[in-house]
Image 1 (cartoon, rainbow, N blue to C red):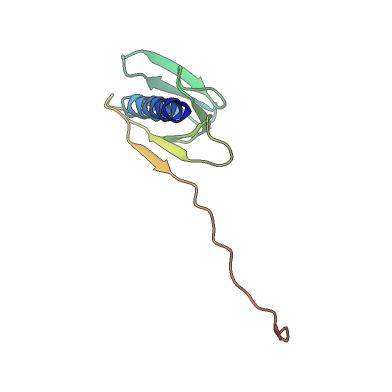
Image 2: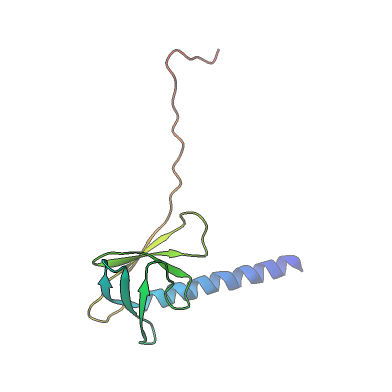
Length: 120
């Protein structure tokens, strides 16, 4: 019974995350103001909103981390650590913005040896 409940909860969480990803791909970055740290976003329903650094995009879990001249850097607030970063590119035409995800890569530890040190 617990296994079924866990599988159902996992399915709901994965669906919820996918729903936000779809909503993010329907957003348009209309105007970017790096000096003010603000941007104007057109949501999926056509509603315009002004977001600043540290604020979330509407009701989504994505938080604005940086505003550049041509794109926004977003972070999923549900993830711990670095997690994945998302670039939301500007789209002055009103079409949905291009979404680019950057996944965190764990570096592999390098093998090294100290000269004169032997394992005998």
